[in-house]
Structures are given as structure tokens and as C-alpha cells.
Length: 158
Image (cartoon, rainbow, N blue to C red; front, top):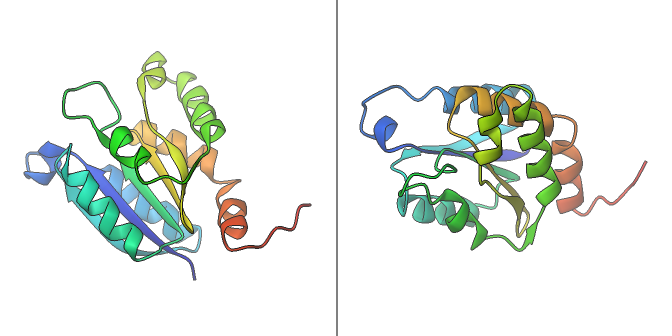
């Protein structure tokens, strides 16, 4: 079974001001897709993302999904931090997610997330809203297993 990690970057959720709703959506989706969610962290926006992402990547999961910190607030730094860990970027994945999100809200264009690979791990930044997460997961659904297969060295095309 492939393993997964989830990082929720939300200062307010980390402080208990409100309940995180994105993490459970991501967890349920990953489990429905057959992934074992071995790590979940809810942390403040900004620099705490660096340590959490670094620790998760050391475990070499198949996928790490972040949610939050992709907007324009001063402490929204998830994309900048993530970019430093990526070996290769997959800009088409994020283009597809933003495009899908624009069918629901023009604000989807403001999401600055990255998708790419860090060693054997696929890493993706999703927005911090449940709607944005759902849009992103719908786009990922038909390609996630293929991405993981390629990262595992299974290069069959068909």
C-alpha cells in the first residue's frame, strides 16, 4: 500500500480557532484511493511548513498533499517553501486545478500552489478551502496512480 502525508497550513486551525475541514476531506479521498495516510499535521502558516514538509519527505511517502498557505496573505508561504524541495515541477497539474476551480469561482486563479516531485514523492499544494480541495482532488483522481507508478519506475504507457 502506498503511503501519504497531509500538511494543513492554517494558523487559525492550528490555534484551535476553528476546526480544519480540509484535512479530513483529503484523508478520506486518499484512503478511498487505497493510500495509507501515515502523517497528518495541522500547523501555522509560514515557516512551520518547511519543517513539517522536510520531516514528511524524509519518510519517503508516495504523496504529500498540503492545503493552505497558497494565497496572498503575508504569511502564505507554502508555495515558496515547497518549491525549494522539488526536483521537478509539474505545472500542467496546477494549471488543470486552477482551470477546474475557475468554473466555481474566479478566485481559483489566485492560488499559487506547486505540484512536482521530491525524490520518489509527489508533492502538491492545494488551496485552504474545502471547495478548492475538492476541485483539486477531482483533477488528481485520474492521474495520481500513474504519477506514483512512474515515480516507482513503472514506465508502461498505454
